[in-house]
Each structure stands twice: as C-alpha cells, then as structure tokens.
Length: 64
Image 1 (tube, rainbow, N blue to C red):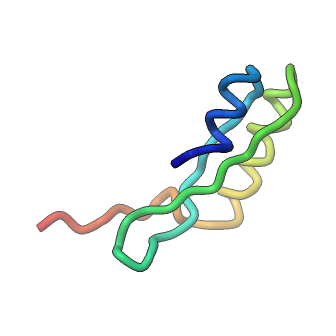
Image 2: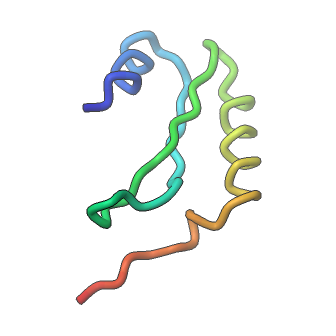
C-alpha cells in the first residue's frame, strides 16, 4: 500500500517518485519526495539531485 502517496494526493501536495533499487524478490523499489503546497519546483529539484547522484533510473530489468 502507498499510504503516504494517498495522503499527498488527498491533500493536493506535490510529490514525485524515483527508482531507488530492487527488492529481495527482484521487484523495483522507489523513493517518494513530497513537498509543501505550491512548491513543486523544490520537489522536482530534490528528485533531480537524487538522480544525479545515482543510476537507478538508467537500469532496466532483464526480460526473459
């Protein structure tokens, strides 16, 4: 369940999810940045900064 995402959506808060790894069963995991109302740029800046320091957004699962 995405409880935090539901809270943000219900409150109208800006949020963005970025990939941050792979779980034990091989499924992708993500990290969510959420901000104050009307601060979309700060949320996007945080996500961009995270992605500039990691390479999870460039990795793709192998398809059999």
